Figure (cartoon, one colour):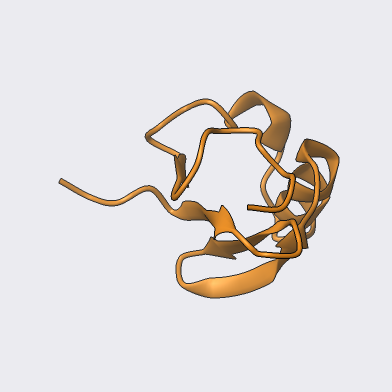
Length: 70
């Protein structure tokens, strides 16, 4: 089984989550909006439609759409 191409990593101690696409760091997101902006910049069309699709996005170390400090 292949891993999803987008990974939203665990919450940092100061808030936000690192976002990677195919192993490339896109940035530190503090909201779904930040995540969508990073994915659009990486060339994904309609990224808001894949945020809850486990074939596209893996949310690690916390619930999906959780952005506050750990």
